[in-house]
Length: 211
Image (cartoon, rainbow, N blue to C red; front, side, top):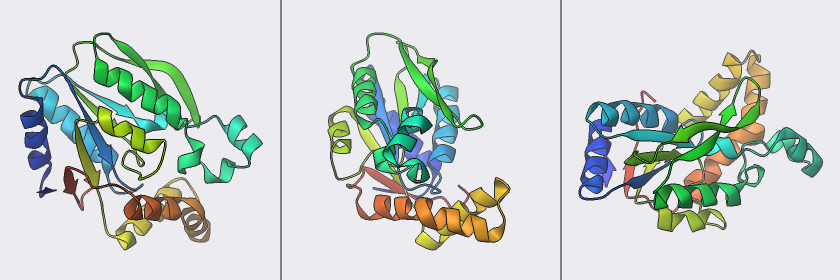
C-alpha cells in the first residue's frame, strides 16, 4: 500500500487496532527520510483520537561509545553493527506481549549517550510506534523482529534528497561544508543506501517531502 498522506497512515493504524488490545507498528526507513517526523505526528493524532500511543525509538539501543571504541566502530556509529540488536528485539517482543508496564532506554543526543530505563510504556498503551532505520533489514538478527510487528511502515525519499538532508544535519551541528559532506559520505549515506537496498517490503510505503 502506498500512503499519500499522514492521515492515510493513521487510518491504517486505527483499522489495524480494531478489536485488539495492542499493536506494535514498525516505522522503518533510511536516515533522513522523516521517520521521527512521521512518528511524532502519528503520536499526536492517535492520542488526540483517543488511542493511547507511545513512541519507542531504536536509538535507545546504541552501543556505548567505549564499546564502539574497543571494537573500532566509533566512526561507524549508526550502522547496524553499532546497535544492541538482540536487546532491541527482546524489548519489542516484550512490548508486543503486553500485560505490564515496560521501562525503555532513550538516547540522549546532546550527551551522545543512552539513558537506561529513562521512560515507561504503560500497560494501558494500545499503539506502540517502534521507530528505527533497520526494522526491516533483510538479515539477522533484524529479521527476528517480524513476528512482533503487527503493521510495518517504510518511509522513503529519493537518494539525492536523503544526501541533502544528511549533509544539512552536520551543517546544523557546526561543521563547514567540506566537513559536513565528508561526515555524511563516510557513514550516513552508506547506511541510507543499505536500508534502501536491503529492506524487506513493508505493509505501507510513504514519502513526505516536508519530513
